[in-house]
Length: 296
Image (tube, rainbow, N blue to C red; front, side, top):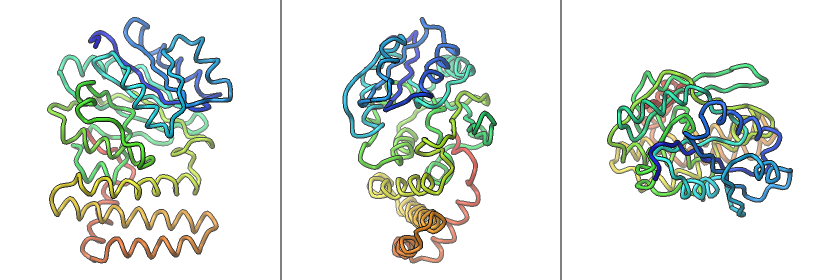
């Protein structure tokens, strides 16, 4: 481990044309001597690998089942004391230097900055992690933005790898593990990360299909979390989350032109949770956390 560098890890598959800007954002934010960029390419066929071979990054070329498997491979080779995850179509912003400095000065094992979402060059959303503490309810019901956080390498290794068989819900799953294991957390009010919303994004495309994929991922995550959440209150929280995720998935089916599937998924939501009290709790948490960052 080299304490003097920050490891930027990136899973990638057919990242063009956004990838060059992502790599350049790291080089603009961090001097070369202060960081390493590790890219795990899962078998790109669009010129991504040719670009990466000449871009000064450490390239891992190996087929993988998902972006999380690629992410795990990149993390396993990271040498820095702290690690940050960059998607191949997003940007790391200059304030990440201040976030990294704060992490080292305060000896924090998880330090959170703010994130933003841009669509066609315009900022359409900014997180507010700094105004609230992170807890299981906020991780489930608010916006997690795992990419705007620096994680100490030791904390990540203690948490173990990202779970690869629960889809996009692996972000929340990992944040819940880090919350339980973290000894000292801190935050920075500056924006350190930009998510780019575009038609090819799995989570940021702002289409009914992408909304469906996000909520489907949440439902895939639920069984994996059931053993992790200890007391009855937290398990009830998970029931509420599953119910609302199923309703949101049904809504995406309906407005996406699949009314029969919407009905089936809506009935499934009722099977997840038959308690009116739990439904009320879930709706309250949804209203409280919707559109907000999940905290630090």
